[in-house]
Amino acid sequence: MIIGLTNQKGGAGKTTVAGHLAYWLSQRGTVIVVDADAQQSSTNWMKDLKLPCKTMIDPDDLFDELPTLAEQYAAVVVDGPGSLSETTKAILSRCDLALVPCKPAGLDMHSTSKTVRILRQARELRVGCRM
Ligand SMILES: Nc1ncnc2c1ncn2[C@@H]1O[C@H](COP(=O)(O)OP(=O)(O)OP(=O)(O)O)[C@@H](O)[C@H]1O
Ligand SMILES: [Mg+2]
Image (cartoon, rainbow, N blue to C red; front, side):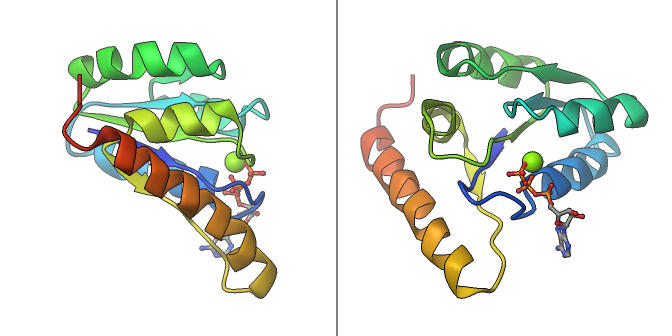
């Protein structure tokens, strides 16, 4: 399963959730974290936890390589960047579960609604066409 953490809002909790989720999953099966954020916070955190982690920011790499990683690991946790970039769209195009952390404040909710819009579009594109 590919689990994507996305939200264009910075500081929403993407990396925090990705790290804790990856550790929890690692106690139950194989897991790799894909760090799609140039800040490389997850990459550094996973080094400390000694969990597999791959930095992958290029949208084409994510699109092509996430399915392969999903065949090799029980879970692939993708920590997305704080932007509505092609990178985020590639993650949403490939993930089986999208988690969109959001703080309970007006500005955060407004920003998050744009991410949810892209998520809805990705779902519409993908219905019945998983390859
Ligand atoms: N559930 C939570 N409650 C309180 N603080 C939290 C929670 N989740 C994360 N934080 C704190 O919020 C800050 C930002 O979190 P984090 O780095 O995970 O966000 P992010 O969405 O990955 O940001 P960025 O887009 O910059 O990568 C951190 O200091 C983190 O400890
Ligand atoms: Mg982050």
